[in-house]
Picture (tube, rainbow, N blue to C red):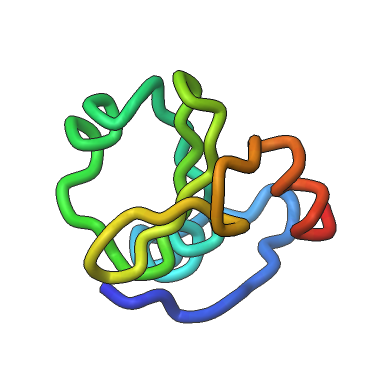
Length: 86
């Protein structure tokens, strides 16, 4: 399912599965121990997904065909997090 865009959920909201799959999955960063852990936990990759790999301290995004480092190189999570304006 393609993401539905961005939505802010008020505190205490009860979310339907369509909200979780349509909004939150495209707004979240999955945290995994390593690539094998990510492969074991995600059934289908969707373009735009973002994951953080603890073993390599890397933030990656799925392009629709492969996982690539955010920031275009061996930049660590903390640096990318700051670059993203968080």
